[in-house]
Amino acid sequence: MRITKTDYMEYTFCPKNLWLKKHKPELFENIPITDFQKEIILNGQIVDEASMTLFPDGELVTSKNLDPFDYSKELIAKKSITIFQASFEWDDFFVRTDILCFDKDTESWSLYEVKSTNSVKKTPYSHIKDLAFQKLVLKSNNVHIRHVGVIHLNKEYQRNGLLDYDQLFEETDVTNDVQDIENIVHTEMNDMKKYLGMPEKSGCACLYKGRSSQCQTFSYSNPSVPDYSVHNISRIGTRKKLLTDWMNRDIYSIEDIDNPDVLKGYQSFQYLAHMHGGAVVNVREILRILNDLEFPIHFLDYETYMTAIPAFDRCWPWQQMPFQYSIHVLNNDGSLEHKEYLMKEPSQDMTLALVEHLVEDMNDHGSVVVWYAPFEATRNKELATLHPEYSGFLSNMNDRIFDLMKIFSGGHYVDPAFKGSNSIKDVLPVLIPDLAYTDLEIQSGTEAPINWKKFIGQQLEPSEQKLIEKNLLEYCKLDTLAMVRIYQFLKGL
Ligand code: SF4
Image (cartoon, rainbow, N blue to C red; front, side):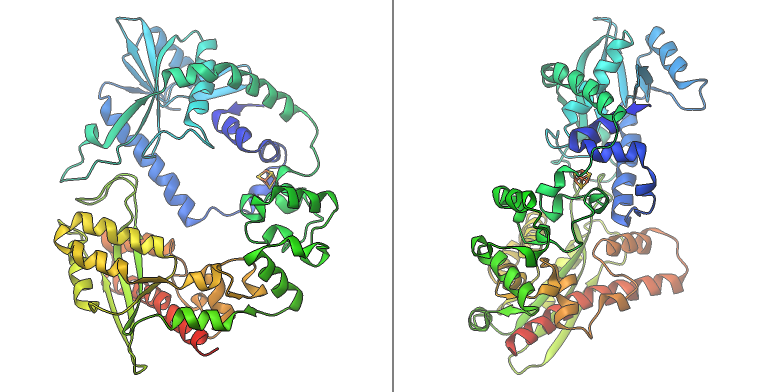
């Protein structure tokens, strides 16, 4: 069985998951890759390719070259200055290195791993372990590695015209970190080999963790656990002792809990809601909170676009650049106005027009209601850094922000149908069933930037462009209308 470094990284995260991938691949066949995952993969490939520009003399090992292993050995023997994608085997282990550079003075090689991240990651998918795995396989192939580095993106880099690759990338020397864990990694590689050769172990470690830790094979490994179980109780993963006690006593269903008094805050409301089969609502507290909001109330939502390599001027790696907003303004007399903005073409200063429109569309007083405030508040802070002339306006907006999600995450309204989620996508259909995202072409925040990329970057037929524009505007509009309707529903309690 060939074991790659990706397999090893998977093993360090979850041995059972790797075992299933190797022995029961059919379990993963029907798990679709989301558009978001596809974008992340695409960004990684783009970063890999871009990093090659740092080494103009590099030679690429591809399947077009003879046998990649033989060709890699040939280039190593020849002491080529830089090799991309050199392949090596040792025992059952296989690696394809991103970049190898030969140093004539020391007669040794530097090993580089390219990562599309803004820094070196130590946990949980440690870049250090990844490189230690590679170094061990290279050592066994008599390739003497003297220096090990991670080439990652420089979060301080702001694009200005053509990309400056020397500024876009930076290297972090991890030679000592890798050396420190080589023995541990060697032991783990042997353990992994043994583990993969063993028969399947029943169950899996996520039985003792909350729902957010589990992967898609959880129900295969734990068939006795229902789809909606004690694992769905909010933040139950942080209460290890309690969850372990329940698991050891086969308490999987919420209705089987025999010690509900140990549940606290939101968890106890979730339990009560489930047992009563209806919402648990603290009307007095909800009204007290909502009565503090000031008219005109602005319901605001941004859509953002993010790429590893900045696509536009003044953007930095992985910046979440707002390209669209929707605002519903609710006045004291009950009247409702809608304002919106969508960036339609690239410009030298991408977000400036958005901020200028925002200034027009927002009143200088009245509450600003969002769903999950850290997101909009952080975008406002970033916009203020980019456009200091509007920093007063943007920080004033942040001073007026109210997070509507807190009514739900704070346990003031808990419905069993939310299934422990506070996402607007889960709350809306329960409270306002006539308003649904499923009626729209774009149905999630991850689809919006993918559509905007098409809208702005491709030569589309005018009719297709019009359609995407309409879909984008409708999606963002629904996000803020949903908040208005939820607010009105709560006020009507
Ligand atoms: S559910 Fe958790 S423990 Fe089980 S295979 Fe998936 S990640 Fe591993």
